[in-house]
Length: 568
Ligand code: XMP
Image 1 (cartoon, helix red, strand yellow):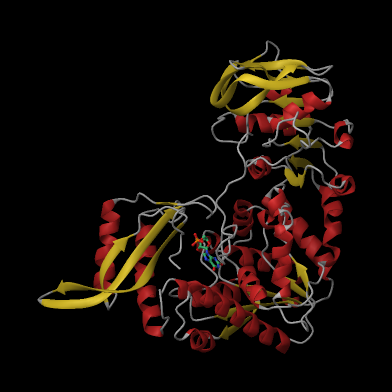
Image 2 (tube, helix red, strand yellow):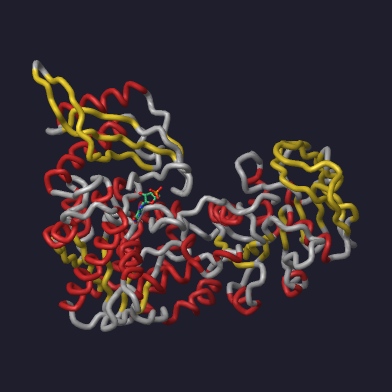
């Protein structure tokens, strides 16, 4: 890939970019950032050995990341084909990689050119492993370059759609595919001489060698099978996994649950575990897995901070206590949170206060439970993947450590993170397989500081009720229109503005509510959703009629960037 990593980051603000649903880890992180000189992180015990254990029971394919913006997408495609995979930096320690016991390797694309000085290389132990290798774009060029073929800048760069024409006797990677089909290209370099032992398996207008294979199962493809613009890409990835690597497709939510439960049981032994529930899917799935493994050795803590949406605390309690029969401690801490937020206008200060207060309440509750050995958290794979981009290397680890670091020193838990190898869509699948309610599994992301950052300016009980009422209408109508899962987030914001209106024969001077509905893939960039006018009209009418004190509704048509999703 010639394009670099996405430039939009949340780095400048204290907003926390999350992989999706905003979880307790985020509160802990905020608290951690506030707690200067926080506790030394506790290492997560035997977590390092789990890779080896995992390897013995399921196929694994290792993806080496050369910095492509699509690397995670490759991993998701492989998982969707029911094969477990892990993403490693291209210069990963060989022992670490071997411990995952891969059946094959995928080399991602990347922004470099193979003939640049310091261009990242394929480790020799991978090249010489005798295992199948699929090099994509830069990965293919590296294969050619390092196996004594030749790569040069092409006369014509190839970006976007291209027609791939297969050779007369297509190799297994192209089994079952038509003679020619559309693929997505994005490269400036091209193979000018095949490495020894390789044959060309496909061409395109600008790439005489658009695919190459050798008898050892080493394959290079110039295009990107992982993107949706290569419609037959999934089939190509499946062919590699099943026909070239010989994988069995044993990565399913059922097999994952069995294995995760086993691992948690072994790790926790007869220790005690706590888990903070937020009402979102990640902590819910993590807690449910731990509960399956160790039953009542798990105690869940749900902190009602007074900043949640209408009926949310009741639903969370009903699900975990009645439906799943977990030991659950509910802490009504609304007074403490709202007391500290009184008169606070600055959004970052609100975040710090909510994070800090959460830690305080959570720690106090944990202390009452006596000896606790483990803290279960819903950390996801995108949060722990080591980035290949030098500027963000190690960032994920720092985040995890912050989480623990935010807690007081006398609570030295070890972490149990049963979701740390899952993508968000896999967490949802597991959640459904665990029989969690759909509304929890598909809940839209909700920020850690809750409604405190959706009541702009001063957060009072009265204003919280107002935003709750408006939020209820938005949610209700979005669900009724069948759009709840299609949009990334949909919510109401209570502004500090008052406007003049007329209701009946009376002049009103009421509050202004903004409705924000956005589409997004990951929350990093977003666009306002083009929802039907009729829907907006119903939302507006209902809010003005049903929410006392509100007399005007506006719809936010700002994308991110330059805006953010939340208003504060
Ligand atoms: P922004 O507003 O930065 O939001 O475009 C991106 C995503 O993050 C959520 N968000 C937060 N989540 N703590 C959180 O846990 C926060 O302080 C916070 N601020 C924003 C937001 O809802 C969106 O999903």
